[in-house]
Every structure is written in structure tokens, then in C-alpha cells.
Length: 161
Length: 170
Picture 1 (cartoon, rainbow over the protein chains, first blue to last red):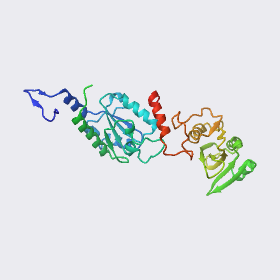
Picture 2: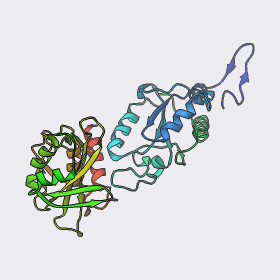
Picture 3: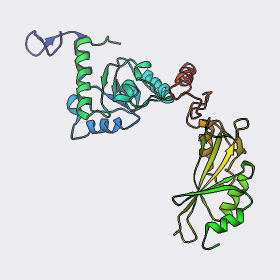
Picture 4: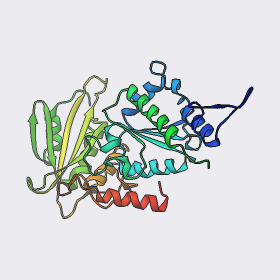
């Protein structure tokens, strides 16, 4: 039962729900993204956060450049094996619960870089929740991915830790 | 020296130059590897090629012998910064002894260029102050731009990545 879906009116000025529902409602409407931009996709990610597309309409407003204050990692750009260990380290520094968006062809599957240095998809070392195709994807696609993450949080939730 | 002509250069370096070629206004001079440092010194100090544009290498595996060529691109701005003359110096390096004197004593900027050539081709620059890999992980054990290295071979990279994860060394 989500707090928005069917709140039980218990009288004047209060309603009942579960702690999990409240927590998930809060989580999904105030995602704090950690931008991990390494290439041109990062420019589209910046575009998505600026006034024209305005990701803050969906609560993902405060981009945190410290992983310790973030719960959504947006990996946008080509990830090389040398960068992969850094990416994994930053992911591990984020507090639970946390989600990952793989933005762009390079992060999803290596893109055009079938070479000795480039990771062929970041799901080799990160648990990815939403993949966005495109080279680079439009800001609308990133907004769509954030909304998909919100739906996922709403449906699956995450334990209180 | 004011004014500059390629004839002056050929006359001065005459005995050092093994061969030269000209293609669409680009001049290339082949020199011996053990004389390269001396020639670069002369080019910088007497002919005022003050700027080392690029230093790179080519692997001619199965095409030419000896296998490697080191390429220096030099630029002359002129006394009044109105000339913009560019020449290319090449030297051949054998596969058995892939080493050459470092140009860092002449241009400090050769430092990272030589590190890149070492990283990609495994060519050792003698006298370089800090010859470490610059792009690939330090424990990487291949030279990826050599023609006998499969460009899609990700195993050495994975090995370095796993090691970095294990040791927490980022």
C-alpha cells in the first residue's frame, strides 16, 4: 500500500500507513543523483538538469558530487578499465539504498569502442537498474529513466537500513 | 640566424642525414638513432626549432625492417614569430633493441610524449627522468599499439582492473 494510493483516513488530521511506504515515497520523490560523467553524455546530463529540461521537477534536483550524500548514480560516458575501479569505489561509498542509471551506448555496451581499454558495459562491475540507449541520449531520455527509477522504488521499495 | 632555408639545414646536417623526402611541402629527414639527440640539439639551438610539436612512433611490423620509426615534429616560429616552418625527423629503431636517447634534456615537454610512446610501443628512452606508463595502468604488461597486439584483447586490462579492486589502489 502506497501512501498516495489508498491512505486510510483515521479521523481528523492523521492517516495511517506503513513506515516502508513513507520511506519509499520520500526516496522516490527526492532522488539525489551522483553524476559520474566521463564523456559527451555528461553534457546531455547537464542539459537535463538545467532550466530547459529541469530534472528538479521530478525531485532529482540536487546533484551531489560527494557519493556519501547521493542515492542515484548516473554513469554517463565511456568507462575504461582504469576508470572502472574508480567508478566501483565511488559506488561503494554511496549509502544504501542506491540505484544506478547507465546512460548512453558506451556505458550500456561499450558503444563504438570495441578496444583493449574500454569496458563493454558497466554491468560487468555495477548492478544497473535502468539502461538508456543513444549516442548521446536526449535529456528527455534521462528524465524518462529517472521516472522509471521512481516507479521501481514505488513498486519494489527498499528495506529500511 | 635571420632568415631560414632548407638548403642551409641540409648543408649543416649534410653528413647526418641518411635520406630526405618532400611531399606537398612537408619535409622529412631520416637520421641515425645514435645521432638523433645531437641533430635535435643543433636544430633547436642553431636553427631555432624551439617547439617540439609531437613525438611519436610507428610500428611497421611485416612492412619495413627495422620495425619501429620514431617521429619528431619540429616547429620554427622565426625571429619575429612570422615564419611557421615545420619539419619532420625520423629515425629507425630495431625490434631487438627498442631504445633511443631521451629528448627531455632539449625539450622538457618531451617528457610525457616519451612516456606515451613507451606506454604504447615499449620503446625505452635512455636518460628519461621518470619513464612510467602514462595512460595504461602501471601493472599493465602489454604494449597495445604494437601491431602484434590484438586491439580487442581486454584480458590484460581486466587483470589490472581486478588487481586494483583487490588492493583498493585507485
